Amino acid sequence: MERDEGRGRVAVVTGGAGGIGKATAQVLADRGWRVVISDLDAQASRDTAASIGAWAEPFDVTDEGATRAAFASIETNVGPIDALFANAGLIQAGSRPEDSSLAEFDSIMSVNLRGVYVSCVCAGALMVKRGRGGIVITGSVTASRTAPLHAYAPSKAAVVHMAACLAAEWGRAGVRVNAVSPGYVATPPILANIKSGKRDLRLLVGGAALGRLVESEEIGRTVAFLLSDDASAITGINLPVDAGWLAGSHLTTYGGVREASGA
Image 1 (cartoon, rainbow, N blue to C red):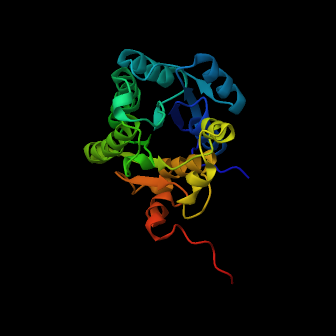
Image 2: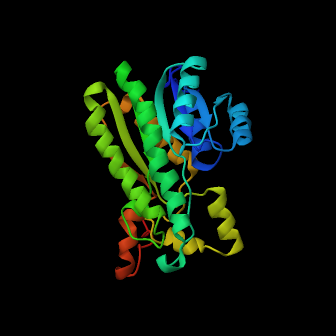
Image 3: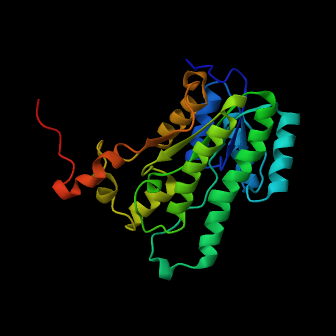
């Protein structure tokens, strides 16, 4: 039986045409939200929206004018925006900082930090006027640990802090803002890298307390919870969804996470 947490309210998912965004959009749609897929890839936005019975409103999150226009269009054609999952972002391959280009750094910061900020401010301003709303920003466990991702990881640390700043700013206006930080998620890019030998599955899951990858739908269910009325007193937090990677990864100095003992 489908849950009706959304009760017809409008939720916008940026970066919603694939991976975590698409899985979250599906979860929200299943729970009664009127979902709008917003992705830079217009055709992918339309295809994903059609597959889950959602609306498509593609735009570039780095373009403030396009973002404002898109949100205005959504409010006119779909309804008042009650929720935003600010998920659009670029990933990065691990490398030494001296081997990475400044152009790559600028591109990642433009989308992962500036684009998230623009989306949150444009949507948040509408929510503040109505005195209600919820925003969830996609962070990462790399916001809390070092990684050879010298643009991506700092961008995620910044948006995690941004969530707390916006939560403090907009709380009295009835707008809640939180971050969710995925660990290693079984998205198509990760699975493709494992299959090609670029990433070692044993290393990805070895430090996780649960000993496995996270599924995209598990991120989606967490986002749905944070946007639901069940989380009405939760704002300004960063919630890791990482199969216990943050808890277990430091245990390498003690021989790693122990295997389950017999009953």
